[in-house]
Amino acid sequence: PTGPVILLGHSMGGMALMSWAPQFPAEVGDRVLGAFLLSTAAGELVQTGPLGHVVRLLTRLRLLGLWLTVLRWVAPALERSRKRGTKVGRRYVRHYLFGRGDRDDAELVTMVQQLLEATPLTTSAAFYPTFLTHDERAGLPVLAGIPTTVLCGTDDRLTPHRFSQAMASALGIRCELVLVPAAGHSVNVTRPELVDAALHDLLDRSLAAGRVVTA
Image 1: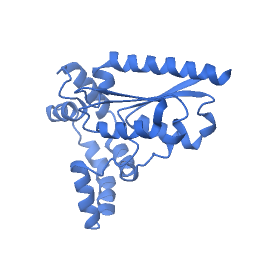
Image 2: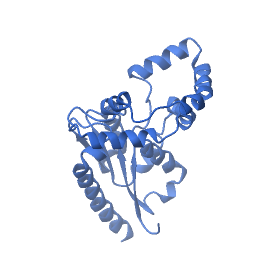
Image 3: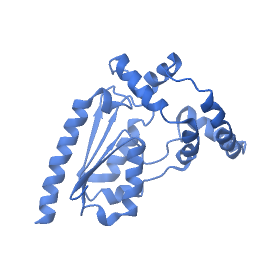
Image 4: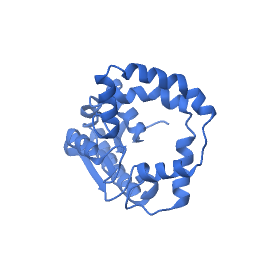
């Protein structure tokens, strides 16, 4: 695309956006007029929760490196024997990617399950280690110079809304924090009207700020 743009990233897309910003700071405010961070986190993803406990235990036992290596080794075999579209997979998706307040729409859950299962396990095993050291907080001061929106469901089990609150605090006065009650990680799928409204608001704020900068 040419001309001014608004960047939007959901989950890992938001992480990529925050990683991009400090690498190309001159683009922010010049070409990039606004940024939307949706159901994502700037860092400390594995510091808490069940996964955090596992990582800390493996680290304490000095087995984390071995575990990651074994994971990469067995991923191809697991992928070959992998079954998709199972009831167990559906329950996992419903629990972790949807909130308690999201309607139990079988078609939506199936769609998200298919999207998730389209990623090969070999790919997941390759990028998983990056979550252990994921820290893109350096991108937030760069994005603080333009209008931003941070949106998250209050029942997001993958990137809990405390991460969104921390990002919004770091982004400062030009950031709008939107918390969607009882929505989960797939809030863009389950509450599209609220996400669209937040995006339109960001567009208005970004265009207004862009006109001021241009003038």
